[in-house]
Amino acid sequence: MIEGAWKHYAAVWGVDYEWIKGRFAPGMMTKPGMTVSRWIDGVLTPNDMVDQGPNLRAQIFWGHAPNSQTRGLDMKKAMDKLDLLVVIDPYPSATAAMAAMPGDPGDLNPRRAVYLLPATTQFETSGSVTASNRSLQWRERVIEPLFESRTDHMIMTQLADKLGFGKEFVKNYKMVPGKGGLMEPETESVLREINRGVWTIGYTGQSPERLKAHMRNMHVFDVKTLRARGGVDAETGYKLDGEYFGLPWPCYGTPELRHPGTANLYDTSLNVMEGGGNFRANFGVERDGQSLLAADGSASKGADIQTGYPEFDSTLLKKLGWWNELTDAEKKAADGKNWKTDSSGGIIRVAMKNHGCHPFGNARARAVVWNFPDPIPQHREPLYSVRPDMVAKYPTYDDKKTFWRLPTLYRTVQDKNIDIVKKFPLILTSGRLVEYEGGGDETRSNPWLAELQQFAFVQVNPAVANDRNIREGDDVWVSTPTGARIKVRARITEAVDRSTVFIPFHFAGHWQGKDLRRYYPEGAAPIVLGEAVNTATTYGYDAVTMMQETKTTVCQLERA
Image (cartoon, rainbow, N blue to C red; front, side, top):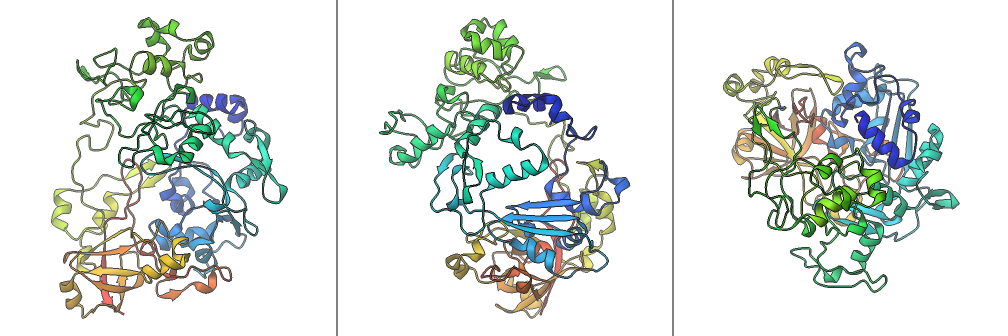
């Protein structure tokens, strides 16, 4: 985060900014971080090529599946070189088995420590959760934590204690007895702290009280529009009419503003206090002499400003003559601030409720993204391609010496593999299944779901299968340029064409044909085990986000 963001959150947390700054090595506090997709290289890359002090020495897998990340062979080497590996999860996950299974003896750090810390499932804790449509729900505890498991917020609190900032961590929380009488933050307090700080994406209006009222009155919300049609909460008298279920973010302002949530982003047909909006003024007000703000007449319904305008801050409010619509307390908090750092929410209240304007401004959509490697999107052939002619026509980017703290290769990898099609003539893509989620350790441990998908498989076109004497249900080896060979079952189908095979990524527990069940803690292995496609996937990262390449690499098939 930049310095201003740190200062904002220091105020939210109620701690001194200089105290936070003192806990960082010089230059590290505002340095862009290392993405989760590249932690492997944070361990394995020579230190003089890493844009930080030491290499990564510790890794915590907190509800994270290693088999959902690419380059499994390299990941095993990285796990073995760590000083500390921690798994915090209701299930040991593939991490435990990968760490325990033998690797190259030369890679193993003899001082490495591995800890498995059992965390609770969603049924053993309470708090807010957010769905993919941006709606929140309040989750109630169903049963007490089982065995030695602890809630995430208890584990975080105890970790903060060990690291020496426990008092600061829980400063804003009401502490309550948890598992075994150990103290943990009340989850309502946690959400209220989030509400006080995360203005920029509208995570501020969804108080525990509002969410709980929604859960008690789910029947009043339309299942298609999500909007409440009348309804009064019998417990509190809270009126639900007009609100969207779960107050989907952005839900702007303080809870008292009663913004209804935003079911559909950028909808100018609605007033901003009914969930309407417009494009955000996030990239300045002009570029190369051209205005980036919306044209005259382009504004959300009922806005007092019917043209483009920048994001709101205290200066703009004063220029518009709206400053005195703030209370004295709001003026004190808002002076010198913008809408996303004004802790009172007053700037948002005046802009939205009083004048129907969006606090983040009103701008044009960007068609030319000047700060991207390709301002106008164009095709770049994958690093591993079966089409050398397309590589020549649409080459990748030049290598980057430092990108998110690490060197990142593009052209070097592509040029080295220009003739890879001779050995690996098929495109390998991966993706999801309906029955499983993420790395699959939890869902593959569920006997009902395990019944539906009992083995890892590869979808193969009939022509490709016939050329290789592969029949439905045969075990096949899938090999890739990494040197990996994974054994999966063949599914013959026209769902893929002759150029491509597909493997889902939810499986783990087999490693290049070997069963890893004995490397899980006793009785903790999933019901269904299988090869992880990401054991075999190759190097490749997005040039903007550093997202891993999971959708295209190359492979060869043969009957096992």
